[in-house]
Image (cartoon, helix red, strand yellow):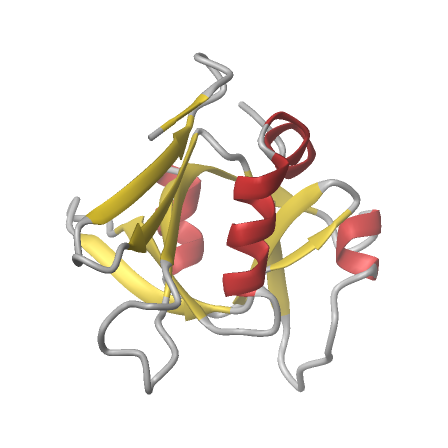
Length: 152
């Protein structure tokens, strides 16, 4: 399982594209419900201590779901005014691993909440950027740690 730093070291341009679409934004993360169906929810990712991280409320049903099956998929949302997709999209998938409140990545987490949180590091098992050319044909850049290379 690759960390964000491993991904960024292997594909710095793709990682920069991804972070430009995630930094300070809400993105959508999918996990698997107890019945096997998908659950999509908004998250505010951050990068710290070499990890891509997310938090869930400590009362969320997602905690039980992730404890059973820690797979996730994450997708950036387009800015509201970008219905044509000109901003581009980023998708990642991998595994969630719970990290403690004393972990350096959690200590560096931006913002505070009035409710309790449970924190996770997101491995990067696949990363995909989608951009749209003038002729509206999608251009894909993909990275997987097993191949160690991006493809177009």
